[in-house]
Length: 408
Image (cartoon, rainbow, N blue to C red):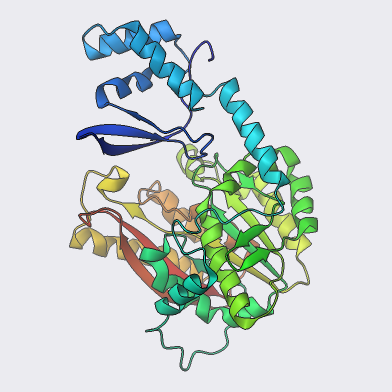
């Protein structure tokens, strides 16, 4: 254990254990199989695991915060368990990351992380599920769309299935004509403004999607391999690219044609640009990555996908209000403005609208959509396929907004 314990970024989820409310400390990177739950009182010690205190000082600060003395052994034991579970930023967790990334890169392909968890891993069952989502979708009169850009959800299929189906079925002609598919996904655990590549091909229940290693290597060389791969471990479990890649592969499977190369890219948050007055358009790494993609794909029939959700609002996301009818209507209008900018290919307006309200709606697709628009440069025509509000808590007081768009 390090001298001054520092807690890694974790998700804190309320759970009930033996009839009592507890906190589950979920590690987004899943460095170990250990699962730690803590009673609310003891969990308050984590407030002081910020790297500025020794275990003894954490104990003293915790006792003062609690207003009563607690045996030091309780704190020492809790810190030891956190260390074993790799939940502290120290040599133990760094060794675990190194081991996992080495193992990840040694695989012939990335296994589908959510197969048999969020969707069926069996081809027949998955095909039946996808066909079911499209049963009520009438494609009569829909022309064979052959555009360049897709905005697809990355929410779970249970909530977003019909929207996935509508956008991907309408994009089928473009998918089948593509020489290359680039998928930009939100890195939910990524650092600020990161652009993370992986040379490991993504697998789906339908097989393996090959990658364009030459293009990936060109981008990595341009932005620096350290920047390109420092968070590659996030590809291991991140769902944003995967959930669109499965629909992409489904179309090739149904058409009985081999898939072209697919380049998976995870993009970190743009929130810091909004809050510090910066701008991604002036960021050397991001603009170099986009320019290299442009030059590296010149002359190819490229389909670029932003695998994204939109707003995340309500108590489930720490808002102090519920999403009543009036707030839902207001959100529709705010999202309408964003979608209008996307459909016009207006990256500046898209960014400015989010920055103007300091991203208060937590647009989960902020960074992938912006970079997609910068890659496309111009959009001749955009079509809004669908827009929906998906419940985000049992009371339906919170929601995630999603949309399917096609850009020519």
